[in-house]
Length: 292
Ligand SMILES: Cc1cc2nc3c(=O)[nH]c(=O)nc-3n(C[C@H](O)[C@H](O)[C@H](O)COP(=O)(O)OP(=O)(O)OC[C@H]3O[C@@H](n4cnc5c(N)ncnc54)[C@H](O)[C@@H]3O)c2cc1C
Ligand code: FES
Image 1 (tube, rainbow, N blue to C red):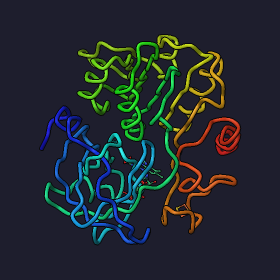
Image 2 (cartoon, protein in one colour):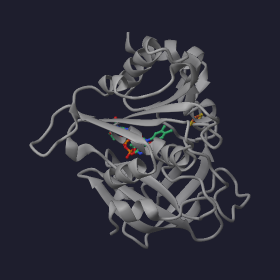
Image 3 (cartoon, protein in one colour):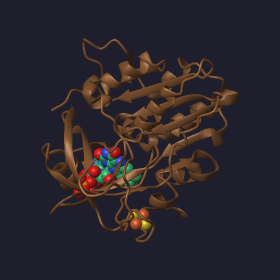
Image 4 (cartoon, helix red, strand yellow):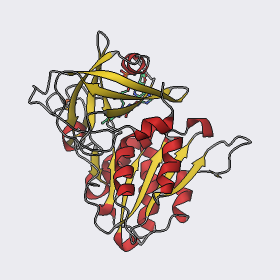
């Protein structure tokens, strides 16, 4: 078992890739495991026979729990040249349960990387507002470290994190490390306990605290779709261009490569055209329609 801090210090990344079929999972070994909350754990994996191709922040892998099944899980490590890849998984069903109850040394299968990314490998001089709800921080972890490690004197990077309660916040040690790198971290919970020193309320209320130049700001959002809709609305009211807002979406997946149609959202396949989309004009109206 590692601490959250140890998990964040592992070298994660992309080495020694192979040209395997997109349907054949490569064997990876679990090399560390950290329990983030009662039902969320973070695993680091290393290749045993060949690695997946290089990935970008925001992409996902299809993970196989042998003899149980396969699920789409976002890549949570920062892209580097290292072989280790990190995934954070919530225990909600058979496959996720099997994955997070695997032990160090156990093997899992990996296909990927798939999908679009947060475009944070070359962030330019824009300010950033990164907004996460609950486990929505997992697909953003690589991007926020990428931004933090390239933080210039001019650029401001804000991380706004919302959770139901303090014990539901993941990557606690990472957030202290991000603050040391210059990221402004703001946290809020729906229900506080007696030790909580952060805000209480909706994550959208943190936008007023963040410091950014709306004429040159990009926003990255991941969490429940209702949170994404209200956050995008508030960011647009704050003056951010709707086309500078990127959101990551989830749907049930099967093939992960645009063949089966399981992940359709309007005219898009989330696995192929997403999971990261521009808020406007791409998905704004699709999410609104879904909730009517
Ligand atoms: C692009 C993409 C990235 C993803 N990234 C992650 C990630 O980083 N970490 C992660 O834990 N999951 C992630 N998911 C969700 C993941 O793919 C699975 O849907 C989830 O792990 C449940 O699979 P299961 O087979 O264990 O449960 P299932 O048997 O599919 O579901 C069991 C029960 O849980 C419910 N359920 C299914 N999914 C969720 C959910 N996400 N939240 C709450 N209830 C749910 C179902 O409705 C059902 O009632 C991602 C999905 C996509 C499409
Ligand atoms: S999961 Fe098969 S098309 Fe997207």
